[in-house]
Length: 455
Image (cartoon, rainbow, N blue to C red; front, side):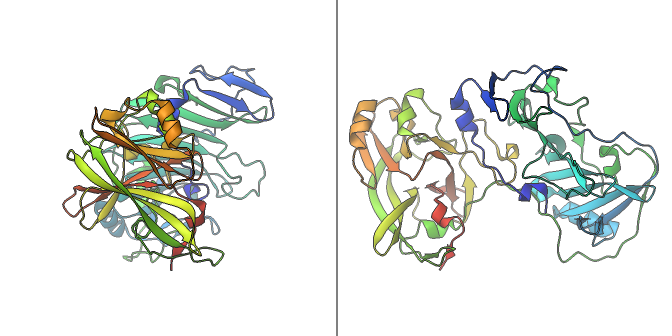
């Protein structure tokens, strides 16, 4: 298990764009500060404690290719030969390499190119991973720094990854062309509490910045990226692919049972044994004269929110709302679907806005659509300014499953679907066999289905 397995987070850059000035409350200090890109001063109450990388070494390094690090045995799990590791590397499959100096494991590297992922974990004298330096493999084949996570272990016998979250994290956000936009920092403070801030690339939050924009190493070339520049030997291993791996590569949030969620009559068994049923409620059609779909909180249309990058041919498309019903009584609105093509969906993608890309997401994260009124609205971007807020407020009065307004001047329809809470919700694109958009699904991610399975 990697640290990402412990507490997957869910982000919404769209929410950040709406937030305006960034400020943070510091727990335990009773203070509030507007955050800037200035570094912490020596006596600054917001001073954090980075988790520094070990000093570089030019001593001889031994590489053991394996399934990963065994934190209980504090050694390489399921060693494999270099040829097996190389074959897995070329196929994009996961493998790992433990790097030892003087017979002592100093680092382990986890690699999985199908997930665009490589991470160097430094190991302390107690055999615990304490600092992870994660990279993403970009379409141009280069590795670029993605994130650093570090843990301070106050006790000699403290377990690995003690605490719910890292004590220091620095995430590098980039544009689609790999240009750094900002570095997001989350750190525990030496004076107590925690601080979240953002700064530019030149103002890196640690004494030294890890390597960035590097070539992909060979399977025996990982020591250099871990700061080990001495001669390298590779320990022989069996030509056997491990049956299991003690870690999994990070992956952005994926839709869960989404086909069943948008199928009338689907049954789910909840964790407490109840069996609610999906009920489809037709919501008419929506006119999309520009083919640019906008999903937004109806109370924020005056901010001219950005449409999804995936467009469809201008036209009129059916809309359905899906409820979770129990004993014939609806309990939750779980999803809303716009059907573009009435053909089978073969794959699902996260709907993005301009400038967003999945290489910017960590494990379990997604770009969501922010909600402040517990409702989401669907419309064509051509009609974003066509609906006065007073008309929206009047139309949404009551407890209907959905509400709709139409504007003849723009030829658009506004369909408003009440959800269950404020927050941030993803939109999934169902694609047909030829890659075309088959449907859009607004996923309200209701708690009742979080651990439920199809019955």
